[in-house]
Length: 174
Ligand SMILES: Nc1ncnc2c1ncn2[C@@H]1O[C@H](COP(=O)(O)OP(=O)(O)OP(=O)(O)O)[C@@H](O)[C@H]1O
Ligand SMILES: [Mg+2]
Image 1 (tube, protein in one colour):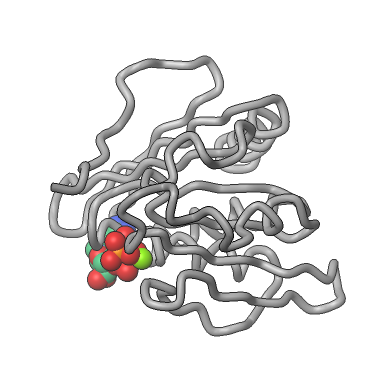
Image 2 (cartoon, protein in one colour):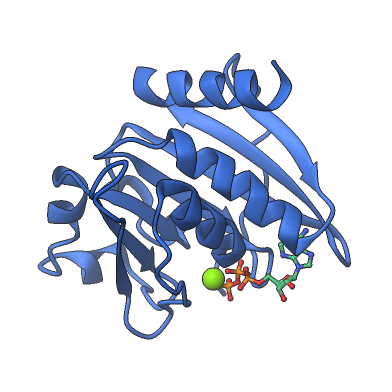
């Protein structure tokens, strides 16, 4: 049985919760986040099947300034998108680890090179990789509440991601 993620019970001062009422709203949340993401950032998306991880990524890719088509990389593991030169030229790595049963399978694939690069990493089913991922990152937990209602929880790990969540709060609610 694969583990089903749930929202972490612990509260940290920088975390942020909100509700999405539609796929379009989840994309807009992703877009706002994408507008604040910087080269080298790592965002982990955790949550059950069909909770909306790929929709959030779609918005984030748009917010980063790419018009590339976002598709689910469930079979290929990694999709790459490019942003235009303006405002900044970047590579976005969209990773889906659903098919990884054991984190050891990740050895030798070269995923580390992605987060050591100046690209941006958006990783679905990141719970499959457990402690193997970089210590500093933003985790986005998503959970079903109803047919089109989802709860999203941003949990930053490390100062850079606390700043990112605070900047998001200022933009969204400030
Ligand atoms: N508030 C919502 N936010 C996002 N998606 C929603 C919402 N309400 C309904 N949906 C629907 O849920 C589905 C989410 O699909 P999506 O591919 O984004 O999920 P996923 O988490 O990436 O799934 P998987 O685990 O298979 O990768 C879509 O069919 C979308 O229309
Ligand atoms: Mg997906």
